[in-house]
Amino acid sequence: MDRADKRIYTLSSERPVIAVLKTGVPLVLGMFVMVFYNLVDTFFIGKLNDDYQMAAVNLGYPVMMIMIAAGNMVGTGGSSVIARFLGAGENDKAEHALCMGYVLTLVNSVVLGAAGLFLLQPLVRVLGAADNTFGYTADYVSVLLIGGFFLMGNYTFGQLMRAEGSVKYSVVGMMTGAAANIILDPIFIFGLSMGVKGAAVATVLGNAAGCGVMIFMYVIKRTILKFHAVNFRPDSGLIGEIYRVGIPASLETAFTAATFVVLNNLAVGYGELAVAGMGISQKVMSFGSYIYQGFAAGLQPLMGYNCGAKNFDRMLKLLKANVFVTGAVEIVVMVIFGIFAPVIIGRFTVNPVVIRYGCRVLRANMFILPFVGATSSSRATFQSMGKPLYALGITIVRQGVLYIPLLLLMNSMFDFYGLIWAQPVTELVTMIGALILLTGFLKKMRMDAATGLDS
Image 1: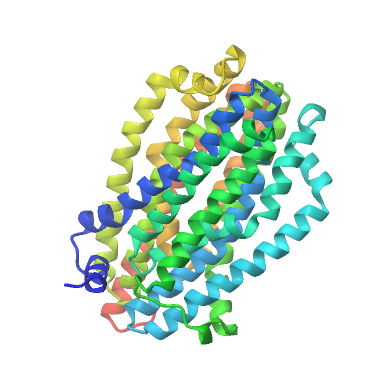
Image 2: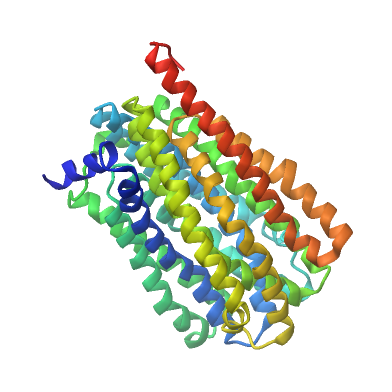
């Protein structure tokens, strides 16, 4: 069985738990490496013993999330289209969708970067920067905006590559980028005395290295799908379908960025050291977050392929396997965070106030981990099936109906503790609703297929 046949077998016929592990574990490991983009920045900035620069990294993080949202828009939409075309045996259309993903990434990065730089000062104020953090935040954000193509591309190109089952190559790209960032951070932060701005430069260059690896794999034809010059021509139908699926997916990340802005502005009321502690905790939590995101990303091509093949029984089995595996792993991570929180936070700062705030946040937020994986799997499944409005509905309920109102309410009632416990409450309620919605939808699709109806 050649490489292409093995990838298709995993998508179509492998035992559900094994298929989930094969597609998910490499992505989780690769995303652990991606964590270092933020953790390494945080670690080296912490060595400056300047808590205002530490806070600036956290304040600028929503801009990174907006770029990820733009990348997710093209990556999720493009990978859904590619997987469904492959499942239907239409490889030529899948290759055209691949190339459209690259073109749209370039266009979106130019538009977003130009708008962000033009509105830089009001943007930094909206992010919650005060006098002591404004300059540092502006420096950090401006570099991210300039390097937007690579920040978006490293995220988007990996998703497009995983849609055909080429998980290994996308992980190699991510690991290369993270390794470059680890090497470059001390050079730019300390060697060139650029501080927080140097951390942003290293992040952009690291992402550029990751993009280069993934593009190279297509150029040397190690992938199932190939680049063809003719496929870079615009196709309104493909672009429309990519955006139809991708825009709701990107709104999920955009909503998350908005909640970060609300959260940071509320946290500023407890002092900028509270923001710094919260920022460290959120970076540490990204270890847990990338686990469920990795398994959800691995699930997406499995679901997309089997949706294209109308194998709805297999889709239900894959969903159950993914929720079980993700939940089991996240419980282990939660226990580790709870026991070792002071040690973990203390690796990034020596300030006892920052450590105290960081531990409080980490020990509250860790309780989302057993729940949020099921929600993420549900959204990924809807996106892979080309049903983005269902995924968007879950996001709107989670972020707009539940989380932001709970942030405001619980902060007013319970102060800082209310602020940090709003998310665990949100995730529990969202998980229950998402699983009920998705399992009911899949069963309906299975029944409709059995009776010859179009769902």
